[in-house]
Amino acid sequence: MEHPTRPTPPERGAGPADASDATRPAGAQPPAGWGATRARRRPATLGSRRPLPERPPVRASAAWRDGDPVGRRQFADLGPFALESGGRLPAVRLAYETWGELDEDGSNAVLVLHALTGDSHVTGPAGPGHPTPGWWSSMIGPGAPIDTDRWFVVAPNVLGGCQGSTGPASTAPDGRPWGSRFPLLTVRDQVAAEIRLADLLGIDTWALVVGASLGGHRVLEWAVTAPERVESLVAVATTAQTSGDQIAGFHTQLAAIRADPRYRDGDYYDAPDGEGPHVGLGIARQIAHQTYRSAAELDQRFGRIPQGAEDPLEGGRFAVQSYLDHHGDKLARRFDANTYVTLTHTMITHDLGRDRGGVEAALAQVSARSLVVAVDSDRLFTPAQSERVAAAIPRSGPVRYVRSEYGHDGFLVEEDQVGTLVRDFLAEDVRTV
Image (tube, rainbow, N blue to C red; front, side, top):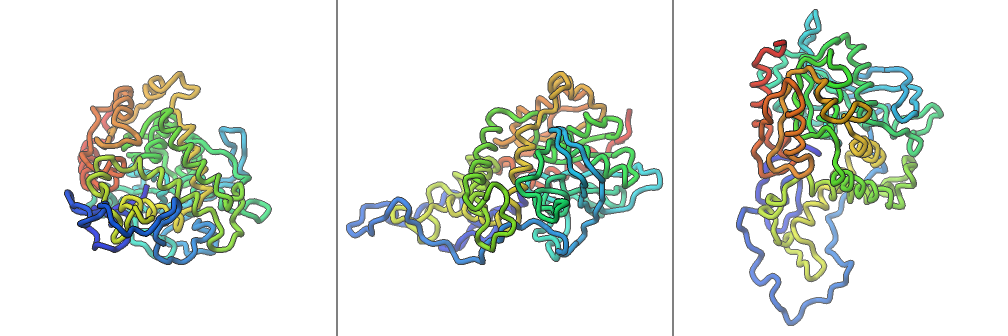
């Protein structure tokens, strides 16, 4: 999930330029005569399609590598690391960013955890070392809902990520990228790494742990693994346990990547530009994006409108197809296929109740004052899953709702609504027993 902006109508005939550009005014109709019987229609074949605009070849991986611009990143070396699956990493590094100043007693620390394709760059412009602007930019800063005049904010790139933390694109001890040799990770492994980061930073207790989607998985895991270190939490658009339906959706995304012959079983890092697994990664993103947005929004924005001057009956695309093509291409240019596989697998195996007596028993161990937020139109992590979380946490109030037509991505698009909820939550005494 990446940061979208609110949609604006495109110029007719123009291709989508950003996450939300391929849209149309509500109620717009197809060009006059489209779809009508025409005497001289050019024959179309099953595989025909108008060519996409020319763009530079996609790199085999867009992972951050040693020697690239550092940007605002800082790095913590965590040493060797045993994993829940029985695997082991001989050395782990986490990249992270911070804002604000830590109080002498360390009591004002806030941990922000990103979603699947996010990273440590929560706020700030794109620039050297940061290919995209912050994904929650209005949430953090002086006077923002998480006010850095009061709070010290830490945002790590997740273990298994591709923006500076140890992951499949990182260099293994033999000097080659880990690639197919990278071990399986779980959400618990990721939180264990973040606990070590907190230790290195001298933070015994987080005043707040906040995150959405995959970041929300880690919020809940933090509160169960180390309840004494989490005073309050905000879990947004997330779940305590992935469902069969969600696992099925994640499985098809992994299958799309693994079926790409250029994936090479995960050992593609030395491939030249244009020869990496960008097709499989792009298809995985397209599958995922259908769950990030609501059916109503896709129908209202696109319906059956053709893309520009393209005619679907002559091999052209509908606008919604162009929109998905754009998102697939965009992710392939800023992410890493193995990282997508690794992190998606952590979502597949996510189960807060594993070896803890079940989800409700695990959530009953949470001592943090809790705010659970759902997006009312979310069809990835559904409101019912948020209701289950809130009902089982002893110090949670009722689920608070972000009202949005955008589906799961509402936690990004409706930043103002999320910000208001977080601001109000923090305005209360976060240390109330």
